[in-house]
Image 1 (cartoon, rainbow, N blue to C red):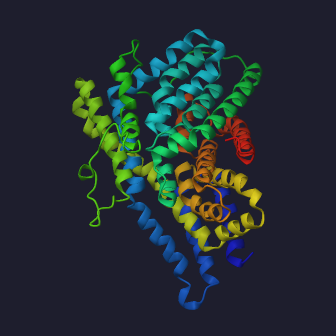
Image 2 (image 1 turned 90 degrees about the vertical axis):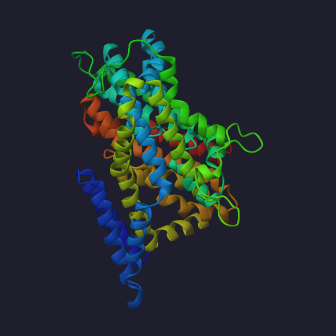
Image 3 (image 1 turned 30 degrees about the vertical axis):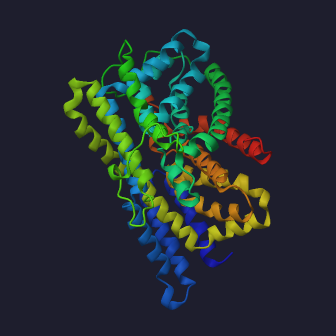
Length: 462
């Protein structure tokens, strides 16, 4: 391994230590990127010693302004903020949770499934946790479960990968950019089997461990605890309000069906002008996601006229939160990924796969998992690393979209295992627990799920 690669590994180890110690992950990743790029420049010719640093700076500016991330993520967070403001998300959660009140033995898998289902239309893991937490945490506490179990259950359901079944998920746009396969096709043909295997295996493992944890947990006051919430949960479901969260999801699926079966036609002129040669601009997909989220916010305002005045404000406040807490992570993680490539580690990974093709499937899942666990962002992990697997997959004759599903699912698992991930911190706050406690409880089941996914993929089952 060359000097730059060795230096990158040392810096990476130091970055992991600093993140674990509680340093801001964006500061750590950006500083690590600059250090690695600087080390990479030392082995170049004198006139090119600035090239690696320049690449990191370019990546910072490009990602900071890249609408592929900014529009879908900020619009999704804005829509989630409108849902909380209008209370529509709580009606959906109540609709899903109501049957669980009568089956205590199924509460653990039931709450995980509720989080998974809500995450599909809401996309944001943090918003999902905030949506369902005030309803499901008191339900679990009233049934006698401890706060760490309730928090870990909330975390697993909100972050195990439900958003990957939504064509609006930014991870799907990353794969689309390299392969040209539409996000709707990925969400319907490629991801479901892998995502459901990961969900079922990790949920079963978590359920079994929860029984053991609860037997060993000291008995305490089981009064409901829900943390901060925007008002009390409703006691009666309004079906109209319960349907609002799925409006953007329904629009995206309807508009994404292959011709001539499109249920909804969204003319390009409403999204982005066609190129002079008549081809559709690649930015159409990301802007269509933003349009669907804005339409969902409009429907929420119409359905809840008493809250309509504040919906636009809430939309932009949510979008700002998404930029500050999600896009910023993607920016710094992409800079880190660029520095890793400049140091030659991505090329080394490609050579390793070329020498041992059987390692493709495990590495495609586990390397993004580790990156996401450090950075706290599944999207940043997918964006930074998918390119490193796309080329080797094509060279080996593998379907690069199928490899992308492993990268995305592995990244989602790593995010859920990261003590600095926004969703982990949200679940810890909602339940008054330590983020590391929640991470330790979900890590084993998630790793088990990833192992099963890789084994089944290697055997051609999924």
